[in-house]
Amino acid sequence: MVKWCIVILVTAMYTYLLWACSTTDAVAQTSKAVNILSISQPSGSSRTIAFPVDSSMSQVTIDASYPVAGSFTLTVSRPDGSVVLPSDLGVKFISTTTGLYVSVSSPSQGNWSVSLSGTGAFSIVVSGMATLDLLACEFVREDGRPGHEALFALPGDPVANRPNIVHASMTSGVSTAQFDLRSLSGTVLQAMSLSKGGGLGSNQFFGQVNPPTSPFMCYVTGSDALGQVYQRMTPRISTGQTIIVEPPPPQDLVPGLSPTFRFKVTNLGISETFAVSGFDSKGYLQSVTPPVVVIGQNESVNLDVLLAIPVGTLIGTSDSITVNVVGAGGGRNFASVRSSVFVKSTIMVPGVVGLSRSLAFNTLTEQQLIPGPISEVIANVGAGTVLSQNPSSGAVVPIGTLVAMTVSAGALSVVGDLDNDGDVDKKDIDIILAAKGSAASSPNDPRDVDKDGKITILDARKLTTMCTRPNCAIQ
Image 1 (tube, helix red, strand yellow):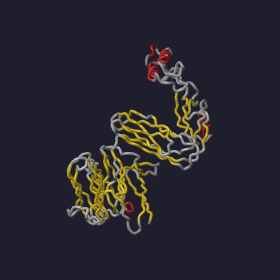
Image 2 (cartoon, rainbow, N blue to C red):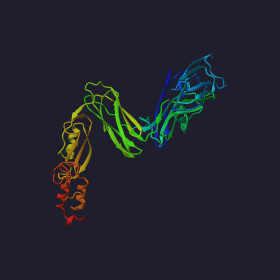
Image 3 (tube, rainbow, N blue to C red):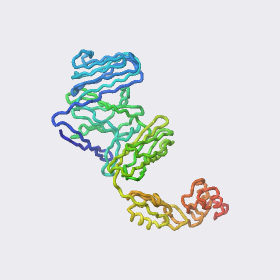
Image 4 (cartoon, rainbow, N blue to C red):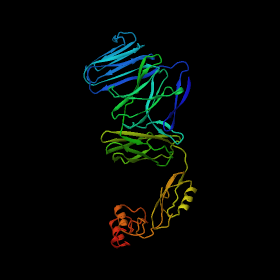
């Protein structure tokens, strides 16, 4: 046996790398189970379903079922029109009142068919043993750090009616390949134009597709190396969604700490209510918040997933976190992220509130913490003074954690001049009224004129007495 790996280059606006590895026999490929078609209908009538048997197939199996006994009569026919009978050589035949199972060894090449006579719900799955197969047909996304972009499988279903990248992979023995998306009843919904790679990547295919909103499966048809028609499919059912769930990057899991993973959900459809749930493979998950959220059209919200990593967890343990989002209208999607447990030193966050910006930077960096991000607000304290920090003083965090700070931009040149235009007028009062009902951002929030910790109508009234223009007129 030999192991080989290939690198596929896909060039659009950027160049992306996709590694594909496979193990093949140095002399010949081995037959494996393959999927040829899968059809199901909640109601139907008499129908003939055709499928090809190619030169690589050593066995074909037809498995048909219908929930109502006796609602259908089924007949399986060879390419020459002869009906498959239980007494035929190499045939395994099981017929019941609710289904038919037929397995044929060394089937003749060409178009076979299954004829159904009757009415009602039914399902048919055709599979077999062959060397030629569709190894993958999946939607992928561009990801990776600059200069090292790559294609990764989507964590959930693709976005409907928008361009999505598709990657398909096949075994050797393929001469031509045409890919399409089909409904669960077997109807072709749309063809996919996938480009074939070259050299070692000749069995890799890429392209862009706008998926439908109805359920679908991926099929491929074409000619094998001997010119015989083949058909393969992947049994995974996908549905184009109007909901995008984006996972956060992995992060180191430290025993004894409780990390938070932030997922982003975007709704491309109409505004609706979504139920949110989550689970993880190791049972570390504590909560997903919020559990219910209303998202408007083309709006996004963040979901926070809290874990608790037990003390004593073995180093190298990996945990896969999945978030499911289900809309009241039936739309749904999910995303997953996998992280691992590592030994990572922790430290207690020092208090930097009240320090100057430069001193706070030095204090944090000396403790191997990273200052930032920094935001500035107008406050009646010296410019550069740290007003708040997150994580707070005393919190235990891994070394290298970001510590966000709010810093004073300095006091107002004129007390009560909230828009800093040199006077106190109606514009400044309007700033207070716009924030009415909210909490003060800090003890030095200039909007909190009466210093009670809240922005209220009383602050606006008090500011009125401080106006520098008659009747608080606007200049």
